[in-house]
Image (cartoon, rainbow, N blue to C red):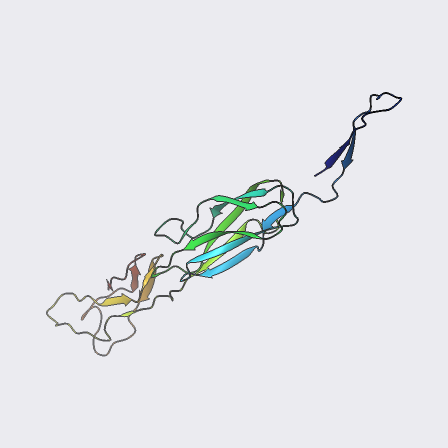
Length: 219
């Protein structure tokens, strides 16, 4: 910002001091107010990694420290211990006269559930001593899932049932959990000698695996 120099006349000889004493010289700053912003508009991290530093940059130095708040404002990932990630809202501080990037740390939690990629929306707000640039704000952090898409299959390739029995459950299995329910259709694909409805009845339908389960489901 602008700075001042004060000049004072004193100890006159054969004269007296008049009204315009002291005299103030103002040095007008030719640097604009610095801008703060995320260094990048987006970033990503593998779910198996534990932390990631998110960088915040500044366009110029200041004689005073500069602060800017950060917080989570959205995304599909779930915050909290035991969930996808942890981050407590806080403040980035740029010490006086520095232009070095500053960063805050997001903690990532791995799990064994297929979720697909999830996102965290991070937002800067309320800068002190600077302006928000807005180019990269908000910042999107993507957590890349390290579980593969679950596979579904019959538990066994064949089964048998006595003609005197009335029903038969045919089990379908899944290789892993998912945060979403999973469905798979079943149909009669052919038969040799069995005929419907004289020998059996079965209506085509769907097997549903509820979210977060690996339990077999039956037809």
